[in-house]
Length: 396
Image (cartoon, rainbow, N blue to C red; front, side, top):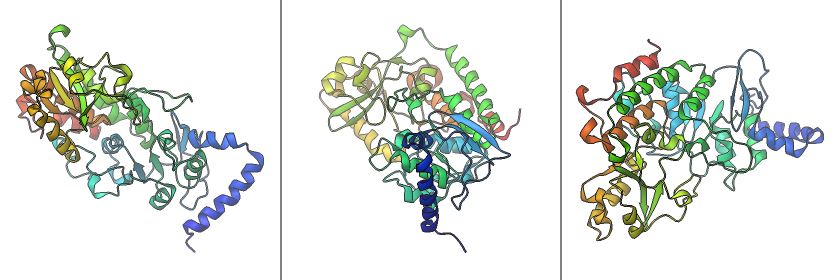
């Protein structure tokens, strides 16, 4: 007889009651966030026997044992969609975070990737994600940072432990995006390549990430060789606009969210703002009004997430501020240097393209004009798309 969610939950409650007798509540919370060497849970809620398999370690979840490569995965952030495509496991993705949360032009530029993954065709679970949703999806791994869930009222440490035990472990690191810890507990920050290579080891395919890393290093070296002296580079302002206020992003701050701008040596117009800028998890600071933005007067304005179809109306509204009597005085507005930026939640393939995009947006006189569709003639591309396809396929 097929076991239902109700009987599965009942079985867990009995096991949990026995566990409480011998285990302190604090240990239960620790298991939720760091399920050390926890075996992948079976679909019926009973832990699979730990045997042949592999263990991968990532903050904040610790060491997680995978008896086999996960066949079903859930994500919230689009970087893990990009990662799954890079390691050849797009078919494992059964649900993701939000609709309209990716740039449709990037993957189509790599030979062999077009049509292999369509996040828009999947369930979008970001709004109101709860335990019942994860039970229903029955994934073997959740690429969701548990610390992120604990910032909401819907999740408690015991809930995380329940899902990790009965469905599948959590395995993600969100807050390396800005290097701002979510709480006072120890939390390790990773650079973009180390983070994605670690997650790729869950699927036993770190080689494509290593190959992409080498390609990116070559790209950056070619860009750096042509950059003007720092004092001659345009000052770049990364900014969102809503309700008459501007939220600045400090692109010189550590974190994978702005790594592509640092890779091209961008000069940060907002470097001195500190906590007035966006950090992560909704902590946005006081922001700037039009006069405050004009006082800093960036040469280039870039709006994060602007390449997402869902964000085009917001980007168009930002550009329309060229008619505003104050904002229109900005150098960036006056010279038509306002661009749609990419995603701070970038995976290993997207990072290559967004590095090229940043170079073209900031230094068009050196690297050529930016195109939203990315359909550059081969003479204007800053890296070879065919080599990306070879890296993903494992070719030398």
